[in-house]
Length: 424
Image (cartoon, rainbow, N blue to C red; front, side, top):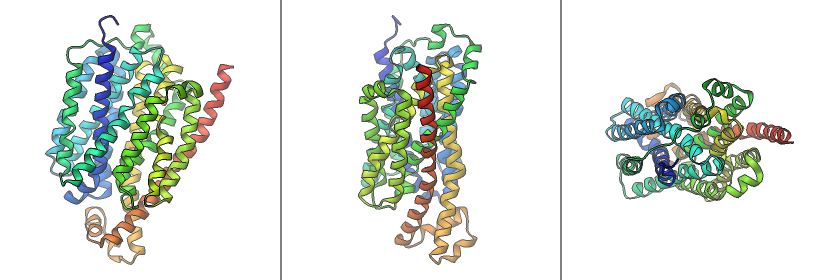
């Protein structure tokens, strides 16, 4: 790596990841305003939000398969172009379909950043992968903090969602400038001489498939809760965007300073502890109201803090022959799971629960309403009634999300015993 500048490339990667997470945070605060401005139902909002999570695995799958042949540098410029185009189209969107397409492009760009930067970091720091991947992934929650505070501040002074999205263009240009003119290393698989056949054998092995299954549950525990935080907790008596900022600020600190803990407990121990705290954290979020929700957010943050980067680090360290494809597929499974869960469960479930709660409160008119008509009716209700409907619906969804980390406690408990036995 004599002609490679790892420090510059690592910094550029961190800024690119910040862009991906800012899109996530600002979109989380946009769902409510978008629904009202364009009279979109919760199901339609779920399809729009879900496109970011669908575009992500499409990109990671493409990137994972071709990054060794095409090279990380070319794919990084694909990410840059998709980010710029997706952000501009979002700003000038006029309804469901333009939001649908622009959100897919942003999600595709986000996925391509992960498809390139995860193997880039692993290639530059082969003897310290899990720690450096955690430090790189500081900037996912870090960017969410930045995006949440930007959205909260701009909401406070009355600036709309279009201007909030426009703020993401600046760091996009910055990461393009940081990458400009710099050489990239070969991926670790190419450097080590692992064959394509060995790589495919690695990603079809039992341990890899088990981790890919678990990624569905870890990703949804973290990202589905965060992405829908305003809809799930917006009527619970606390500022949902500040909760989002608090959760992700703590996650950023944990990932940055968590190196000694990771070395002491090892990745499987970290994952088991994370699952236990996540069960408690989601339970607290769905049962508390008002200022106590900030305490719940702290526990939730401790739970989800290490999930994503430690899953990637575990795969890279324990299934090294899977290479860049392994990292991309694990991340892709997480985001594809997010897309499916949000699109086919969270959005329709919120609509169904709101309708049921409105009926129980005596609003019989909703019995024949759905989609935009239902949302128009709910938006016209007295604020107190609407808040109660949204609070009940949000808690119902959180009850289901709570089942995800319960599964992970069992799965990661088994993984911890398996890895302990394998090392003895």
